[in-house]
Image (cartoon, rainbow, N blue to C red; front, side):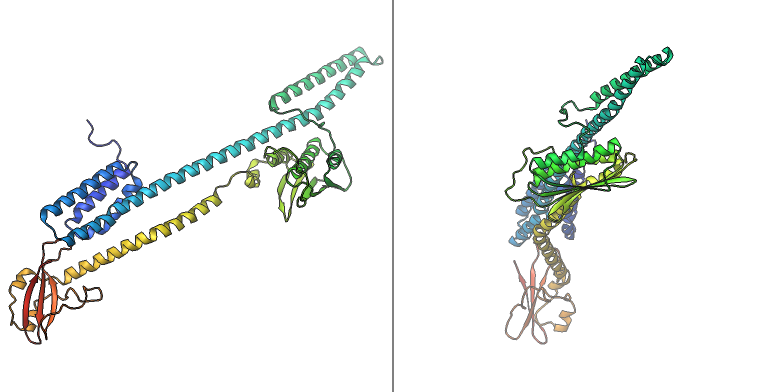
Length: 472
Protein backbone atom coordinates (compact mmCIF):
# COMPACT_ATOMS: atom_id res chain seq x y z
CA UNK A 1 0.00 0.00 0.00
CA UNK A 2 1.42 3.35 -1.00
CA UNK A 3 1.24 5.97 1.74
CA UNK A 4 2.58 8.86 -0.34
CA UNK A 5 1.54 9.88 -3.87
CA UNK A 6 3.75 8.67 -6.68
CA UNK A 7 4.40 12.24 -7.74
CA UNK A 8 4.60 15.11 -5.29
CA UNK A 9 2.55 17.96 -6.67
CA UNK A 10 3.48 21.64 -6.25
CA UNK A 11 0.32 22.36 -4.27
CA UNK A 12 1.18 19.65 -1.74
CA UNK A 13 4.69 21.04 -1.36
CA UNK A 14 3.37 24.55 -0.74
CA UNK A 15 0.85 23.23 1.78
CA UNK A 16 3.57 21.33 3.64
CA UNK A 17 5.72 24.47 3.72
CA UNK A 18 2.80 26.49 5.10
CA UNK A 19 2.21 23.94 7.85
CA UNK A 20 5.92 23.87 8.71
CA UNK A 21 6.14 27.67 8.92
CA UNK A 22 3.03 27.77 11.14
CA UNK A 23 4.53 25.20 13.53
CA UNK A 24 7.88 26.98 13.69
CA UNK A 25 6.13 30.31 14.28
CA UNK A 26 4.75 28.96 17.56
CA UNK A 27 8.34 29.01 18.83
CA UNK A 28 9.58 32.00 16.80
CA UNK A 29 6.60 34.35 16.29
CA UNK A 30 8.44 36.51 13.75
CA UNK A 31 8.05 33.66 11.23
CA UNK A 32 4.34 34.47 11.02
CA UNK A 33 5.40 37.26 8.66
CA UNK A 34 6.47 34.58 6.15
CA UNK A 35 3.32 32.47 6.44
CA UNK A 36 1.25 34.31 3.76
CA UNK A 37 3.78 33.36 1.06
CA UNK A 38 3.38 29.53 1.19
CA UNK A 39 -0.34 29.95 1.87
CA UNK A 40 -0.76 32.03 -1.30
CA UNK A 41 1.28 29.50 -3.28
CA UNK A 42 -0.93 26.73 -1.91
CA UNK A 43 -4.03 28.40 -3.35
CA UNK A 44 -2.26 29.18 -6.63
CA UNK A 45 -0.71 25.75 -7.23
CA UNK A 46 -3.24 23.32 -5.73
CA UNK A 47 -5.48 21.55 -8.22
CA UNK A 48 -8.18 21.13 -5.57
CA UNK A 49 -8.78 23.37 -2.53
CA UNK A 50 -10.12 20.56 -0.37
CA UNK A 51 -6.80 19.43 1.11
CA UNK A 52 -5.70 22.95 2.00
CA UNK A 53 -9.13 23.83 3.40
CA UNK A 54 -9.04 20.73 5.60
CA UNK A 55 -5.55 21.48 6.94
CA UNK A 56 -6.37 25.13 7.59
CA UNK A 57 -9.65 24.24 9.32
CA UNK A 58 -7.87 21.73 11.56
CA UNK A 59 -5.16 24.29 12.37
CA UNK A 60 -7.64 27.03 13.24
CA UNK A 61 -9.71 24.61 15.31
CA UNK A 62 -6.63 23.49 17.24
CA UNK A 63 -5.73 27.12 17.90
CA UNK A 64 -9.21 27.88 19.22
CA UNK A 65 -9.11 24.84 21.50
CA UNK A 66 -5.67 25.84 22.83
CA UNK A 67 -6.71 29.45 23.51
CA UNK A 68 -9.86 28.28 25.29
CA UNK A 69 -8.06 25.67 27.40
CA UNK A 70 -5.24 28.01 28.42
CA UNK A 71 -7.57 30.83 29.43
CA UNK A 72 -5.88 33.48 27.29
CA UNK A 73 -7.03 37.08 27.70
CA UNK A 74 -9.12 38.94 25.14
CA UNK A 75 -6.11 40.72 23.65
CA UNK A 76 -4.53 37.44 22.61
CA UNK A 77 -7.79 36.35 20.95
CA UNK A 78 -7.99 39.61 18.98
CA UNK A 79 -4.34 39.47 17.94
CA UNK A 80 -4.55 35.81 17.01
CA UNK A 81 -7.74 36.30 15.01
CA UNK A 82 -6.27 39.21 13.06
CA UNK A 83 -3.10 37.24 12.43
CA UNK A 84 -5.00 34.21 11.16
CA UNK A 85 -7.18 36.39 8.93
CA UNK A 86 -4.27 38.14 7.23
CA UNK A 87 -1.89 35.19 7.19
CA UNK A 88 -4.15 32.30 6.09
CA UNK A 89 -7.62 32.87 4.55
CA UNK A 90 -6.86 36.10 2.69
CA UNK A 91 -3.63 34.91 0.96
CA UNK A 92 -5.24 31.55 0.23
CA UNK A 93 -8.26 33.18 -1.42
CA UNK A 94 -5.93 35.43 -3.40
CA UNK A 95 -4.08 32.32 -4.58
CA UNK A 96 -7.34 30.64 -5.59
CA UNK A 97 -8.33 33.75 -7.54
CA UNK A 98 -4.99 33.83 -9.33
CA UNK A 99 -5.37 30.16 -10.27
CA UNK A 100 -8.91 30.71 -11.58
CA UNK A 101 -7.82 33.78 -13.52
CA UNK A 102 -4.90 31.85 -15.03
CA UNK A 103 -7.23 28.99 -16.02
CA UNK A 104 -9.67 31.40 -17.67
CA UNK A 105 -6.84 33.16 -19.47
CA UNK A 106 -5.44 29.87 -20.74
CA UNK A 107 -8.90 28.87 -21.97
CA UNK A 108 -9.15 32.19 -23.79
CA UNK A 109 -5.76 31.75 -25.42
CA UNK A 110 -6.66 28.20 -26.39
CA UNK A 111 -9.78 29.54 -28.07
CA UNK A 112 -7.70 32.21 -29.83
CA UNK A 113 -5.22 29.59 -31.02
CA UNK A 114 -8.11 27.48 -32.29
CA UNK A 115 -9.54 30.44 -34.20
CA UNK A 116 -6.14 31.23 -35.65
CA UNK A 117 -5.73 27.62 -36.72
CA UNK A 118 -9.15 27.71 -38.37
CA UNK A 119 -8.18 30.92 -40.16
CA UNK A 120 -5.02 29.27 -41.46
CA UNK A 121 -7.06 26.31 -42.71
CA UNK A 122 -9.48 28.64 -44.48
CA UNK A 123 -6.57 30.51 -46.07
CA UNK A 124 -4.97 27.24 -47.16
CA UNK A 125 -8.25 26.12 -48.67
CA UNK A 126 -8.48 29.40 -50.57
CA UNK A 127 -4.94 28.88 -51.86
CA UNK A 128 -5.84 25.39 -53.03
CA UNK A 129 -8.88 26.73 -54.86
CA UNK A 130 -6.72 29.33 -56.53
CA UNK A 131 -4.27 26.63 -57.56
CA UNK A 132 -7.12 24.73 -59.17
CA UNK A 133 -8.04 27.89 -61.09
CA UNK A 134 -4.41 28.19 -62.15
CA UNK A 135 -4.55 24.59 -63.32
CA UNK A 136 -7.69 25.44 -65.27
CA UNK A 137 -5.97 28.37 -66.93
CA UNK A 138 -3.05 26.13 -67.84
CA UNK A 139 -5.44 23.56 -69.26
CA UNK A 140 -7.20 26.15 -71.38
CA UNK A 141 -3.95 27.62 -72.69
CA UNK A 142 -1.99 24.41 -73.21
CA UNK A 143 -5.04 22.42 -74.25
CA UNK A 144 -5.79 24.97 -76.94
CA UNK A 145 -2.28 24.68 -78.35
CA UNK A 146 -2.44 20.88 -78.18
CA UNK A 147 -5.73 20.95 -80.07
CA UNK A 148 -4.20 23.10 -82.79
CA UNK A 149 -1.22 20.76 -82.93
CA UNK A 150 -3.53 17.77 -83.29
CA UNK A 151 -5.48 19.46 -86.09
CA UNK A 152 -2.32 20.34 -87.99
CA UNK A 153 -0.99 16.81 -87.56
CA UNK A 154 -4.31 15.48 -88.86
CA UNK A 155 -4.04 17.73 -91.89
CA UNK A 156 -0.55 16.45 -92.57
CA UNK A 157 -1.81 12.88 -92.20
CA UNK A 158 -4.36 13.51 -94.97
CA UNK A 159 -1.94 15.34 -97.27
CA UNK A 160 -1.50 13.43 -100.54
CA UNK A 161 1.84 14.99 -101.40
CA UNK A 162 3.58 13.43 -98.39
CA UNK A 163 5.12 10.02 -98.30
CA UNK A 164 3.48 7.18 -96.41
CA UNK A 165 6.26 7.37 -93.78
CA UNK A 166 5.64 11.08 -93.18
CA UNK A 167 1.88 10.57 -92.97
CA UNK A 168 2.46 7.78 -90.42
CA UNK A 169 4.60 10.11 -88.32
CA UNK A 170 1.90 12.78 -88.53
CA UNK A 171 -0.67 10.24 -87.31
CA UNK A 172 1.54 9.36 -84.34
CA UNK A 173 1.95 13.05 -83.58
CA UNK A 174 -1.82 13.57 -83.70
CA UNK A 175 -2.42 10.64 -81.34
CA UNK A 176 0.29 11.86 -78.93
CA UNK A 177 -1.23 15.35 -78.87
CA UNK A 178 -4.64 13.84 -78.14
CA UNK A 179 -3.29 11.71 -75.30
CA UNK A 180 -1.51 14.76 -73.81
CA UNK A 181 -4.74 16.76 -73.92
CA UNK A 182 -6.65 13.92 -72.24
CA UNK A 183 -4.05 13.59 -69.46
CA UNK A 184 -4.07 17.33 -68.93
CA UNK A 185 -7.86 17.29 -68.55
CA UNK A 186 -7.64 14.35 -66.14
CA UNK A 187 -5.06 16.18 -64.02
CA UNK A 188 -7.31 19.22 -63.93
CA UNK A 189 -10.26 17.16 -62.68
CA UNK A 190 -8.08 15.89 -59.81
CA UNK A 191 -6.81 19.35 -58.86
CA UNK A 192 -10.09 21.19 -59.15
CA UNK A 193 -12.14 21.37 -55.96
CA UNK A 194 -15.25 19.19 -56.06
CA UNK A 195 -17.53 21.94 -54.81
CA UNK A 196 -16.13 24.58 -57.15
CA UNK A 197 -18.59 25.67 -59.77
CA UNK A 198 -17.64 25.94 -63.38
CA UNK A 199 -16.40 29.40 -64.37
CA UNK A 200 -19.06 31.69 -65.79
CA UNK A 201 -16.58 33.51 -68.02
CA UNK A 202 -14.08 32.06 -70.48
CA UNK A 203 -10.53 31.86 -69.22
CA UNK A 204 -9.27 33.93 -72.14
CA UNK A 205 -11.58 36.83 -71.26
CA UNK A 206 -9.68 40.09 -71.71
CA UNK A 207 -9.14 42.84 -69.17
CA UNK A 208 -10.92 45.32 -71.42
CA UNK A 209 -14.00 43.08 -71.57
CA UNK A 210 -13.98 42.77 -67.78
CA UNK A 211 -13.93 46.55 -67.33
CA UNK A 212 -16.68 47.00 -69.92
CA UNK A 213 -18.93 44.51 -68.12
CA UNK A 214 -18.33 46.36 -64.84
CA UNK A 215 -19.29 49.65 -66.48
CA UNK A 216 -22.43 48.13 -67.94
CA UNK A 217 -23.44 46.99 -64.44
CA UNK A 218 -23.27 50.58 -63.16
CA UNK A 219 -19.74 50.87 -61.78
CA UNK A 220 -17.63 53.96 -62.44
CA UNK A 221 -14.43 52.34 -63.75
CA UNK A 222 -11.58 53.94 -65.69
CA UNK A 223 -9.00 51.73 -67.43
CA UNK A 224 -5.52 53.16 -68.05
CA UNK A 225 -3.08 51.00 -70.00
CA UNK A 226 0.32 52.66 -70.14
CA UNK A 227 2.95 51.73 -72.73
CA UNK A 228 0.25 50.25 -74.93
CA UNK A 229 -0.96 46.67 -74.98
CA UNK A 230 1.38 43.79 -75.51
CA UNK A 231 1.09 40.04 -75.40
CA UNK A 232 1.79 38.72 -71.89
CA UNK A 233 2.64 35.18 -70.78
CA UNK A 234 -0.53 33.24 -70.13
CA UNK A 235 -0.12 32.94 -66.33
CA UNK A 236 0.89 36.59 -65.95
CA UNK A 237 -2.09 37.70 -68.03
CA UNK A 238 -4.44 35.56 -65.91
CA UNK A 239 -2.91 36.94 -62.69
CA UNK A 240 -3.49 40.53 -63.84
CA UNK A 241 -7.05 39.62 -64.77
CA UNK A 242 -7.71 38.01 -61.36
CA UNK A 243 -6.30 41.00 -59.44
CA UNK A 244 -8.57 43.42 -61.26
CA UNK A 245 -11.55 41.07 -61.07
CA UNK A 246 -11.26 40.57 -57.30
CA UNK A 247 -10.66 44.27 -56.67
CA UNK A 248 -13.77 45.28 -58.64
CA UNK A 249 -15.82 42.58 -56.90
CA UNK A 250 -14.76 43.84 -53.46
CA UNK A 251 -15.53 47.42 -54.49
CA UNK A 252 -19.05 46.45 -55.54
CA UNK A 253 -19.60 44.77 -52.16
CA UNK A 254 -17.86 47.10 -49.74
CA UNK A 255 -17.56 50.47 -51.50
CA UNK A 256 -20.61 50.82 -53.78
CA UNK A 257 -20.66 53.92 -55.92
CA UNK A 258 -16.96 54.68 -55.52
CA UNK A 259 -14.93 55.86 -58.52
CA UNK A 260 -12.52 53.14 -59.61
CA UNK A 261 -9.29 53.45 -61.56
CA UNK A 262 -7.47 50.47 -63.06
CA UNK A 263 -3.91 51.23 -64.18
CA UNK A 264 -1.78 48.66 -66.02
CA UNK A 265 1.82 49.42 -66.98
CA UNK A 266 4.01 47.02 -68.92
CA UNK A 267 7.79 47.28 -69.15
CA UNK A 268 10.44 45.05 -70.62
CA UNK A 269 10.71 43.01 -67.41
CA UNK A 270 7.41 43.22 -65.56
CA UNK A 271 3.83 44.32 -65.57
CA UNK A 272 2.31 46.40 -62.77
CA UNK A 273 -1.38 46.65 -62.04
CA UNK A 274 -2.97 49.01 -59.54
CA UNK A 275 -6.64 49.37 -58.68
CA UNK A 276 -7.63 52.38 -56.57
CA UNK A 277 -11.02 53.30 -55.22
CA UNK A 278 -12.48 56.20 -53.31
CA UNK A 279 -15.00 56.37 -50.50
CA UNK A 280 -18.40 54.73 -51.11
CA UNK A 281 -21.20 57.00 -52.32
CA UNK A 282 -24.07 57.30 -49.82
CA UNK A 283 -27.22 55.58 -51.03
CA UNK A 284 -25.49 53.53 -53.71
CA UNK A 285 -26.82 49.96 -54.02
CA UNK A 286 -24.55 47.33 -52.56
CA UNK A 287 -23.80 44.09 -54.40
CA UNK A 288 -25.54 41.04 -52.97
CA UNK A 289 -23.59 38.23 -51.33
CA UNK A 290 -21.20 38.31 -48.43
CA UNK A 291 -18.31 36.60 -50.19
CA UNK A 292 -15.97 34.01 -48.72
CA UNK A 293 -13.56 36.46 -47.10
CA UNK A 294 -10.58 34.74 -48.72
CA UNK A 295 -10.28 36.70 -51.94
CA UNK A 296 -7.06 38.49 -50.97
CA UNK A 297 -5.51 35.20 -49.88
CA UNK A 298 -6.33 33.75 -53.29
CA UNK A 299 -4.79 36.76 -55.02
CA UNK A 300 -1.59 36.43 -53.02
CA UNK A 301 -1.38 32.78 -54.01
CA UNK A 302 -1.99 33.62 -57.66
CA UNK A 303 0.65 36.40 -57.65
CA UNK A 304 3.13 34.23 -55.74
CA UNK A 305 2.94 31.51 -58.37
CA UNK A 306 4.26 33.89 -61.02
CA UNK A 307 6.95 35.32 -58.70
CA UNK A 308 5.26 38.67 -58.08
CA UNK A 309 4.44 40.82 -55.07
CA UNK A 310 1.00 41.85 -53.85
CA UNK A 311 -0.23 44.71 -51.64
CA UNK A 312 -3.72 45.64 -50.46
CA UNK A 313 -4.87 48.17 -47.90
CA UNK A 314 -6.45 51.52 -47.18
CA UNK A 315 -5.18 54.68 -48.81
CA UNK A 316 -6.68 57.66 -47.02
CA UNK A 317 -10.45 57.57 -47.41
CA UNK A 318 -10.18 54.94 -50.13
CA UNK A 319 -8.15 51.82 -50.72
CA UNK A 320 -5.55 50.43 -53.12
CA UNK A 321 -4.82 46.97 -54.52
CA UNK A 322 -1.55 46.61 -56.42
CA UNK A 323 0.62 43.84 -57.83
CA UNK A 324 3.95 43.67 -59.64
CA UNK A 325 4.48 40.59 -61.78
CA UNK A 326 7.70 39.68 -63.61
CA UNK A 327 7.21 38.53 -67.16
CA UNK A 328 9.50 35.54 -66.66
CA UNK A 329 9.40 34.85 -62.93
CA UNK A 330 9.31 31.79 -60.73
CA UNK A 331 7.06 31.04 -57.76
CA UNK A 332 8.25 32.69 -54.55
CA UNK A 333 8.61 30.89 -51.21
CA UNK A 334 5.80 31.45 -48.75
CA UNK A 335 8.10 32.70 -45.98
CA UNK A 336 7.87 36.22 -47.31
CA UNK A 337 4.19 35.79 -48.01
CA UNK A 338 3.45 35.02 -44.38
CA UNK A 339 4.50 38.55 -43.50
CA UNK A 340 2.14 39.97 -46.09
CA UNK A 341 -0.83 38.06 -44.70
CA UNK A 342 -0.65 39.69 -41.28
CA UNK A 343 -3.98 41.40 -41.89
CA UNK A 344 -5.67 38.18 -43.00
CA UNK A 345 -4.99 35.98 -39.97
CA UNK A 346 -5.52 36.69 -36.32
CA UNK A 347 -2.44 38.08 -34.61
CA UNK A 348 -2.24 37.52 -30.89
CA UNK A 349 0.60 39.87 -29.93
CA UNK A 350 -1.56 43.05 -29.70
CA UNK A 351 -4.12 41.13 -27.66
CA UNK A 352 -1.37 39.87 -25.35
CA UNK A 353 -0.22 43.44 -24.71
CA UNK A 354 -3.75 44.64 -24.00
CA UNK A 355 -4.46 41.71 -21.67
CA UNK A 356 -1.14 42.22 -19.90
CA UNK A 357 -1.88 45.90 -19.27
CA UNK A 358 -5.39 45.03 -18.11
CA UNK A 359 -4.06 42.35 -15.76
CA UNK A 360 -1.57 44.80 -14.25
CA UNK A 361 -4.31 47.41 -13.78
CA UNK A 362 -6.61 44.90 -12.07
CA UNK A 363 -3.78 43.65 -9.89
CA UNK A 364 -2.89 47.20 -8.90
CA UNK A 365 -6.47 48.17 -8.07
CA UNK A 366 -7.33 45.02 -6.14
CA UNK A 367 -3.92 44.17 -4.74
CA UNK A 368 -2.78 47.59 -3.54
CA UNK A 369 -5.18 47.71 -0.54
CA UNK A 370 -4.21 44.17 0.45
CA UNK A 371 -0.51 44.96 0.16
CA UNK A 372 -0.92 48.16 2.17
CA UNK A 373 -2.86 46.29 4.86
CA UNK A 374 -0.25 43.54 5.04
CA UNK A 375 2.60 46.04 5.17
CA UNK A 376 0.79 48.01 7.87
CA UNK A 377 0.21 44.90 9.90
CA UNK A 378 3.82 43.82 9.42
CA UNK A 379 5.04 47.26 10.51
CA UNK A 380 2.82 47.23 13.59
CA UNK A 381 3.98 43.74 14.45
CA UNK A 382 7.62 44.74 14.01
CA UNK A 383 7.13 47.77 16.24
CA UNK A 384 5.45 45.58 18.84
CA UNK A 385 8.34 43.13 18.69
CA UNK A 386 10.82 45.97 19.15
CA UNK A 387 8.90 47.48 22.04
CA UNK A 388 8.54 44.11 23.73
CA UNK A 389 12.26 43.43 23.34
CA UNK A 390 13.33 46.81 24.72
CA UNK A 391 10.64 47.43 27.38
CA UNK A 392 10.64 44.11 29.24
CA UNK A 393 11.39 44.11 32.96
CA UNK A 394 12.16 40.62 34.17
CA UNK A 395 10.05 39.48 37.17
CA UNK A 396 13.22 38.67 39.18
CA UNK A 397 14.37 42.28 38.86
CA UNK A 398 10.95 43.65 39.76
CA UNK A 399 10.90 41.57 42.94
CA UNK A 400 14.03 43.38 44.17
CA UNK A 401 12.48 46.83 43.81
CA UNK A 402 11.19 48.57 46.92
CA UNK A 403 9.65 52.03 47.39
CA UNK A 404 12.23 54.45 48.77
CA UNK A 405 15.15 53.08 46.72
CA UNK A 406 17.41 55.61 45.07
CA UNK A 407 16.15 56.55 41.59
CA UNK A 408 19.55 56.27 39.94
CA UNK A 409 20.06 52.80 41.44
CA UNK A 410 16.65 51.61 40.22
CA UNK A 411 17.00 53.11 36.72
CA UNK A 412 20.27 51.23 36.29
CA UNK A 413 18.30 47.96 36.53
CA UNK A 414 15.50 49.02 34.14
CA UNK A 415 15.35 48.32 30.37
CA UNK A 416 16.26 51.07 27.92
CA UNK A 417 12.67 51.91 26.95
CA UNK A 418 9.22 52.22 28.42
CA UNK A 419 6.09 51.00 26.66
CA UNK A 420 4.92 54.52 25.88
CA UNK A 421 8.28 55.86 24.64
CA UNK A 422 8.86 56.78 21.01
CA UNK A 423 6.52 57.94 18.20
CA UNK A 424 4.77 54.55 18.13
CA UNK A 425 4.38 54.17 21.86
CA UNK A 426 1.22 53.41 23.70
CA UNK A 427 0.32 57.06 24.28
CA UNK A 428 1.25 59.63 26.93
CA UNK A 429 3.02 58.52 30.12
CA UNK A 430 0.68 57.09 32.74
CA UNK A 431 -0.39 59.38 35.55
CA UNK A 432 0.67 58.72 39.12
CA UNK A 433 0.59 60.59 42.41
CA UNK A 434 1.18 64.32 42.20
CA UNK A 435 4.79 65.23 41.62
CA UNK A 436 5.81 61.82 40.27
CA UNK A 437 6.87 60.45 36.86
CA UNK A 438 5.61 56.98 35.97
CA UNK A 439 6.45 54.38 33.32
CA UNK A 440 5.05 50.97 32.32
CA UNK A 441 7.04 47.83 31.49
CA UNK A 442 6.22 44.30 30.35
CA UNK A 443 6.97 41.27 32.47
CA UNK A 444 7.62 39.08 29.37
CA UNK A 445 9.00 39.61 25.88
CA UNK A 446 6.69 37.16 24.06
CA UNK A 447 4.28 38.88 21.68
CA UNK A 448 1.63 36.18 21.81
CA UNK A 449 2.28 35.18 25.37
CA UNK A 450 -0.81 36.39 27.22
CA UNK A 451 0.45 35.16 30.61
CA UNK A 452 2.41 38.28 31.55
CA UNK A 453 1.86 41.36 33.68
CA UNK A 454 2.47 45.05 33.22
CA UNK A 455 4.62 46.81 35.79
CA UNK A 456 4.18 50.49 36.63
CA UNK A 457 6.99 52.33 38.40
CA UNK A 458 6.60 55.91 39.68
CA UNK A 459 9.51 58.15 40.71
CA UNK A 460 9.89 61.56 42.22
CA UNK A 461 13.05 63.53 41.74
CA UNK A 462 15.14 61.32 44.05
CA UNK A 463 13.60 57.92 44.76
CA UNK A 464 11.15 55.20 43.75
CA UNK A 465 7.72 56.08 45.04
CA UNK A 466 5.68 53.03 44.00
CA UNK A 467 6.01 49.71 42.12
CA UNK A 468 2.66 48.26 41.03
CA UNK A 469 1.57 45.18 39.12
CA UNK A 470 -1.23 45.87 36.60
CA UNK A 471 -3.22 42.96 35.28
CA UNK A 472 -4.80 43.18 31.77
